[in-house]
Amino acid sequence: MIYIYDILLNFNDKRLLDFYEWDLTDNIYDMKRVPLFRVDSKTINDLELYTVKFNSDFLDKISYKSFCKNINTSDKYLFLLTDLSHILAIKLDDEGIIVSRSVLLPNDEIESLELAFKMKEIGISYEILKKEESVFNFLTRREEKIQSFLLKELERLYKTNDIDKISYYYLEYFDSKCLDINKMYHKLIDNLLNNFNDNWLKIYNLVKLSYN
Image (cartoon, rainbow, N blue to C red; front, side, top):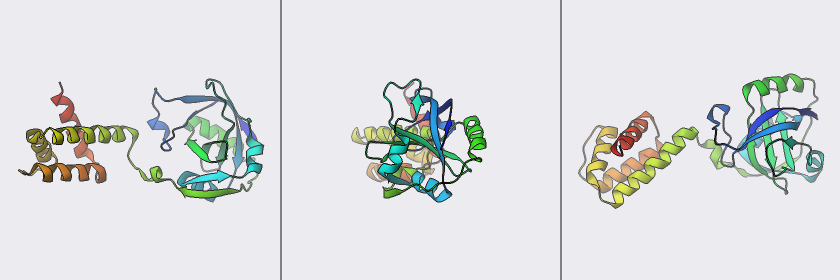
């Protein structure tokens, strides 16, 4: 174990965010010190894909070893793992179960990896509890917000029986006409949930214009 100093982390309870998805409103951790361990690639892969519980021996090693400048509540179990390819930040609850993950900013990761090459690989015992469903959501954070907004908007139009607007969005998306509001609504919803693409960004802009 070594310590990494002066890095930023962005823990998100829903899913692991790439650095380019970080937002100014996020609760950014200004870490002054974090322990780093070198492990194999399988361990990194498991921790990204599954909800994992670490054993008590490992918890004892990392207990209160990290220090954050701007977060009032101290995170008892917070650490970094690397396979020399990339670095994953992990936050655990008191039972040793992963509650959140973060990547590092590119410059922080490059500097930390340079130090990690001097480390010896270790084995860490953990138990896989379940697969993380959110890992397989391939939408960006902005796309998730647009999708949620459009779901609410289509539901509102359907409940108020606004066939004119639903017909308009249906025509814009599918380039075809339909007179059945139930068919149009359910087909739009199905595609919005299962086939999010650039056409939905166009519909989103049209909806915003309708409110101006």
